[in-house]
Image (cartoon, rainbow, N blue to C red; front, side, top):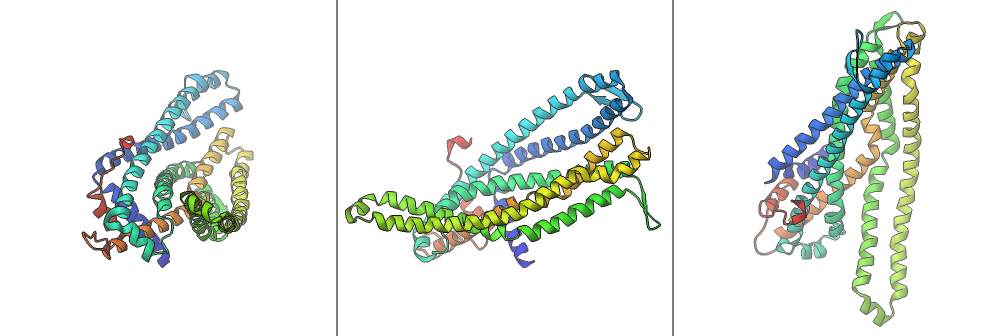
Length: 390
């Protein structure tokens, strides 16, 4: 449990600095728009479940006029009220989906630009790059941490954060829909209201627990893979920069042997990742396939008893899928979460090592007692000077 608290603190320190920087108002506005567009997509998904119910009910009753209206114009019924046609809903959905992705990518590149400038300042100020190379061999490949880990951190933080928010809102929206559709069920003489909600909850929690047990080894493996890949890339760059010396002393065989050894470590760790991913995929693929038919099987008795029309059965299945999907966010994103965990650890380690290196040197010192303070301290004297960011 302690490592979870430590990790959350490190992730928060890395994240909060940008939202408190000189770019905070622009970034917050952009994030608010992205969140609003994502919530709009959730609302349209709720609307589509009611559209599905009306659509399948018109098929069941062979209502041609209602069928055409639900496809192209507007449809009104006592059960569903006024619903727009599928063409209108789809066109609006596409526009919103496109712009929420576009604006999220804009926020992503702004954040990465700012973060890259901060890390460059940390690394180059007070000759920290030199002292780190001499005194802190455990902070491997700082170039990779600045170039790749910063990019991955921004991408994964936005993707996972917005995805989690969507799951929470989706859960709250569709639980109400599923509760109203499922009705009560009596088990061992006890009446359970909204039974489909409880079934979805148990199904998702069980899947989350099993996914964590199966996929836990991926955390350490992904961390090692990033380090080993960076080591191999660094060796290639070093060879390119020392070509004259290698030619002069005929060191090609030694260089190839060293590169082969480094790459063999990459391959061994990659095979370990493959095996761990295979076990996790066996579970997640089966979990997802069962989830596609499971709600229909559970709701089928009410349908065959005549208490639920075809449209209601389809809407129940869709609502169950949304609730189960929201509750299964952890299962669906476990692999990405392990990669994000490794990225946060590497960036936090780099920040702490750079702070330590500057603190031991002569000249102006930048005090960095914590990761967040360090980022904010360097940020205050460095702005993104890359024209493409603006």
